[in-house]
Image (tube, rainbow, N blue to C red; front, side, top):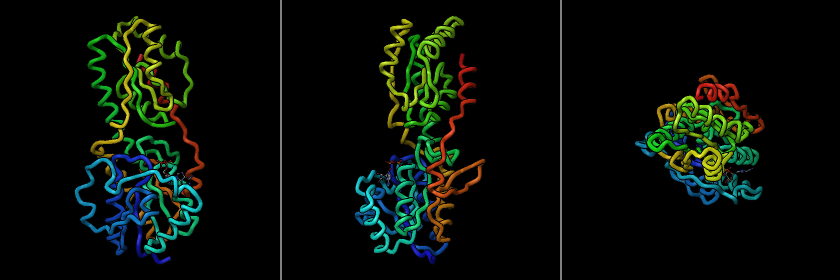
Length: 322
Ligand code: ADP
């Protein structure tokens, strides 16, 4: 296939570093003599023909900004066979030969379906949750971890002053990676993740009590979004231990902010790789990073891969926080 025009969109939840990926797609494709279109607001924008021509300067001054210059959305209309067909026709009308889809696994299912309708798509993993099995890191995850760490450091100050317990919920949907690494970085007494079953008495109360016996007077409990229920948990801790406890849900602050160097570099390398694949007419792939190398997988194969939670790291985290 002779690729002349490619398009790029961001879809699903935004993540810091998406702009670096957009920039790399645009600049790589332009350098190779392709025309590049930016599709705004994800698959919705594709259905509505909301596209802009991208030139070298369209992506200037965005690498250090969080969010996505192309905006993002969730599109129920696209998530139907008729919607995918309509989007494929729109691509043909606009002369789009391939699309880079930056988003999470929902967005990749859309990319797979659109490829099935004759428009080659390449997925780039952009989500703070790190919940995509085929890649060791997703764009935005590193920034979100650093933000969560900073926020919990702030909580620690006030928790310490009052001899309290802080029960903090961090994001990650069904994935506990963000909670695990944040928990290690802040020295949490206990980390609760959806991948590992926990017992309230054994893993929360008894751990708090045994550290209390050796002189600890304030406690941080990090809870993954996929476990949730931090208000109830905090109340239960206070009832059971008598230690004043406060619940905090960090929420969307974790999605924003200037991307870390790691996310900027990862976004840049992945965006470059995706544009290279489409230039060769190769679609139905997901870009990933494995052992510090940028690689790609068949989308269906990638979607079928099972995430493996690092239980060894989880054990280490608890061993050194007691
Ligand atoms: P994320 O990409 O962050 O996982 P979502 O799951 O919300 O976010 O997916 C983003 C968009 O991708 C949806 O609004 C929808 O348009 C499309 N999408 C999600 N799941 C599918 C699917 N199974 N088939 C086709 N398109 C899908």
